Image 1 (cartoon, rainbow, N blue to C red):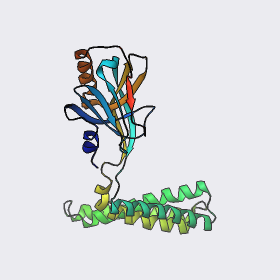
Image 2 (image 1 turned 60 degrees about the horizontal axis):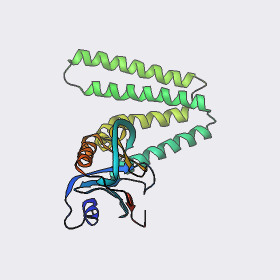
Image 3 (image 1 turned 45 degrees about the vertical axis):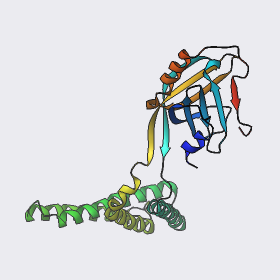
Length: 250
């Protein structure tokens, strides 16, 4: 059931909704994202399972809000290409570890081998791209290709001469690096929007007339705090009976 429909199922016929957004309560309720709304008479929070909690305006004694910033990792689900790329990367890491272990390479030597393989792969791909380029003139291209080949030869010679470099791991890592450098840009869009992102939020603390405290967090642009303060100033304050009500399942 859509979030709006779950929320609407808890609204009575003569009740109007003024603000509807999403957020979370910090304690004392079902964890996860909630649908949070302000009607003409109360604050209502509904979870994905249909559990709810609400507070009528006349039972609120104060509302305070302050901005805060939270870092979160964003990802996408249901993306077959992304799942395949992540699976392939994990398999590649496992293969590197297996080859390094089989060749008796330690952590330090293995890291050195992979680092040298990475720069070697970059040299291979860069030289190939310069060789295929068409805008720098034939003489310049030949010069750049020559420098690239000399650099590539130096890296390979260093790998062969160094006792700290595992040649099987170097060959594997270089080959994988060339493939990733050549074909990786084709799938770069699969990772758009994935990673750590800073999220600006508003933390709202509601105190009821019997001393209970409710803390919820919404997006900064939701303006729930301003509308809640306005609704509180419009309401009267009778003697409290049951300030905070919740569904039996919460």
